[in-house]
Length: 234
Image (cartoon, one colour):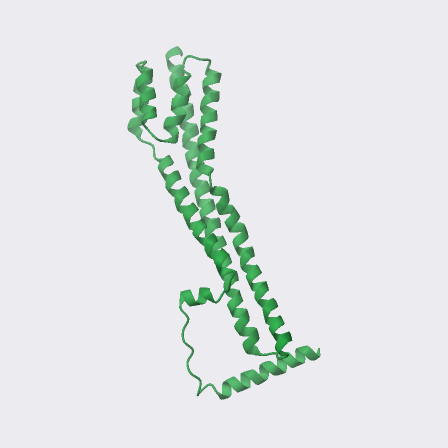
């Protein structure tokens, strides 16, 4: 109770003194973004690394998934024509020269034409799962960053609070300058951690939705392919 009264009295004295000297005070120099980040302390270094990793994985996965989602309708028409005309070698050559998940999926199935339909379906399904796995590569890192970045920010804030109370115990003085100044600097780490976590979380979910669309397209083309190779025997 005595400690609380002492803190309250100190705060009142500080506010009174600040009001008295306000007219003669020199205006505070505005902080720029870089200076503000540097005031966060050592925890900003790992947070900076996490932010760079989040941006890298987000851009890298976006470019890969967007490329995989593109389907050339001329390619699908050419494959259909080759298969209906019995030109298996031409169909395989076209698939090999087209670097897309759908082309690799169809190539797997074309190589097994003539075998039991269940075996063809199994090969196509396995290739589809492999292609989706390739698209999901590195996605888990975004999920990890989204989870640990806010926690690291909170660690920085807690470390700052501990430092504030340690300073008070050493100097035997409770000052608003010590409390407010140190605390606002350490709150920067919490804000930075939350922003990084939000960015990684949003990117993770957007990329997941893109992968789902590619998965649907692969499944649709796999069904069309199975129906196509069964047409001559229908």
